Amino acid sequence: MSEDEEAIARAELAMHLRRQNVASRATLAALEGVPRSLFLGARHKRLAYQDRAAPIDCGQTISQPTIVAMMTDALELRPDMTVLEIGTGSGYQAAILARIAAHVFTVERYHMLSELAAERLRVLRIDNVSFKVGDGHDGWDEHAPFDRIIMTAAAVAVPEALVSQLAPGGILVAPIGDQGHTQELLKCRLTADGLEGERIADVRFVPLVPGVAGVL
Ligand code: SAH
Image (cartoon, rainbow, N blue to C red):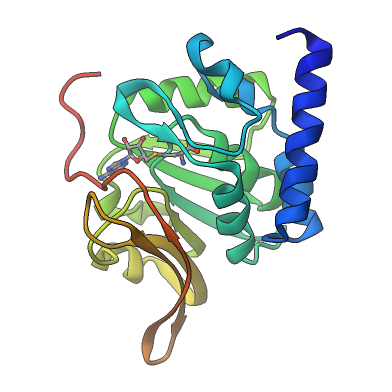
């Protein structure tokens, strides 16, 4: 793809997302500010500005732009907030969160994905993201509580540790449901009575897998 073709594809995706009406202008502006092609390998760059998920290394996927917009918007982010992301993957969602929030803490079970994502964000001069290789089921205790938590891998239930690391009144957005099936994308708020959730969409995410990956 030439530079001109890429610029047109990017603008077309931006217009498509605006027409979808799933996110505010501020959220869409954050998406438009991050070049998705940087987050895909050479073989998949042509998919960068299509509204679909795409393969990344380690058998994982970068989410569909509409879903990234919807999840980012559901977090109701403000510039002074800290966010915990479970499932760094390519780093694309983290880059978008970092354009809106004060600081993003992101956890990934593959060393390779975490390192590649950190490198991409350095190239983009995004310096308010901290990376950790670990099991997202445990969250990131040292930096808790978080104003917002986003899971980008599906679990059958919200892990207990994440609930305990969410600030009072905080919002957690997560795909919840069985592997291999459609999951429910939930937006939950932590109230005095516990997590209160609403369903915002049907989605299909890769599973949240226990433990740190042994190789890669
Ligand atoms: N947010 C990513 C998409 C991630 S796909 C992006 O914008 O590209 C889901 C990611 O969750 C995968 O990279 C997968 O390796 C990771 N993952 C799965 N189980 C995990 C766990 N227990 N802890 C941390 N990361 C996990």
